[in-house]
Amino acid sequence: MTVHLLKLCVGCDSVKDLADWQVEQLKRERKPVELCHRTLQMPKRRHEILDGGSLYWVIKGFVLVRQRIIDLRPDTKDDGTPCCGIVYDRELITTRAQPRRAFQGWRYLEAADAPNDVRPYEDEAGDMPPPGMREELRELRLIDW
Image 1 (cartoon, rainbow, N blue to C red):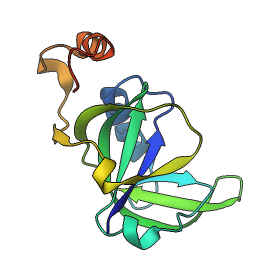
Image 2 (image 1 turned 90 degrees about the horizontal axis):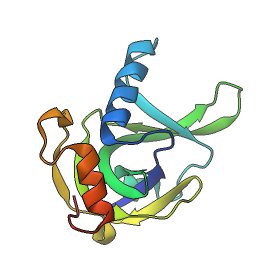
Image 3 (image 1 turned 30 degrees about the vertical axis):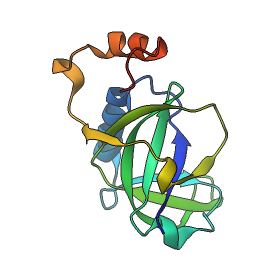
């Protein structure tokens, strides 16, 4: 059975910030180009995650976007500390906004509890309502996306 990972997207105020940051990361990468997030602990439910799991990003208190997890592998941080590398797909898929409190590290997210997909992410320039207004409407609970 598939299980997902939930992770806070620290330092990003929007899905666009995350997308821009990832583009910059890919430009700086010297080895094979891939997106990889390093975390201290290897998930014990590795096989369930690799069975179609995604990395769901929490941005400003809401799950807003996900990326399919490609691999979980042993890695090393820049200071030599062993860690787990979460390798994920470049495609960002926006989800229905789901509120989440802050936490450290990552959490498992059961498939039944995952927010529904909205659509693949595109630059939000043409979206209605605009992102700033959308966040205000979401906080007022007038919309859920």
